[in-house]
Amino acid sequence: MLGGCAAGGGPVEPVGSASSTPSGPVVSGLGSYSYDVAGASGVVTLPGTSDPAVAGAVALAKAPKPVYVTVAVDNRNGQADQVPSAVTVYTVAGTKVIYESAAKYLNAIDTSKMSIEDGNKVIAAYNKINDPVTIGESRTVTMVGTEPLPEDIVRVTVSDAYGDETEATKK
Image (cartoon, rainbow, N blue to C red; front, side):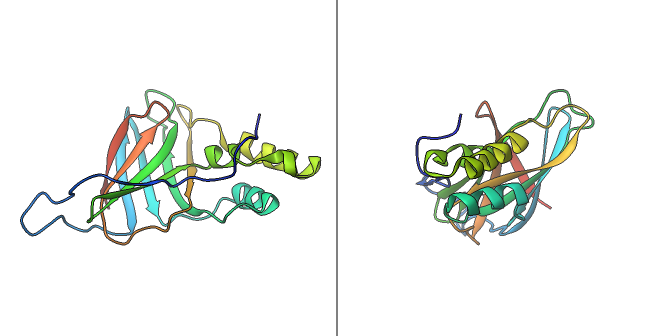
C-alpha cells in the first residue's frame, strides 16, 4: 500500500576522493552508459525521458518534479529477471548522486491527502511500473531523483533490488 512519507529520492553522499591518477579522474559526463549482467544488457541514459505514468502521478500528487534517468533493459538472453532499483553517478569531487526506481518514488507519495480517484491513479501508475524485466523481455525502466544530474560524471553504476552494483561504461 502506498502512503507514509513525502516523495523524495536522490540522496547525495560524499564518497571520498574519486581521483586515481595525478591528473585526476576522466570525466565521461552526461550521455549513454552500457552494462551487462547475467546475460542481460542495459543502457543507462543521462538525462532520461519522463515516463507518462510517473509524470501523471507526480502532477496529481503535486510532488516535486523529478529528474529522470532511464535504463533500457534487454533481457531476451538473460538468465534471471532484472530489477534495476537505482542508478548512481559519481562526480570528480567524490560525491555520489542516486536516482532510485520510479516505483520507489511513487510509493513514497502520501495518497491519504489526495482524492480517492487521484490516489487510485497514483497506485495504478505504481503497479504498472513495479514489475521486473522478465527473461525474454526488453523494456525501459525509469529512475528518478530530486538532485540535478551533475555534468562532471566519472563513474556510473546500476544497482539491482538486492543492492548488487554493476559498473556501466560510457558508450
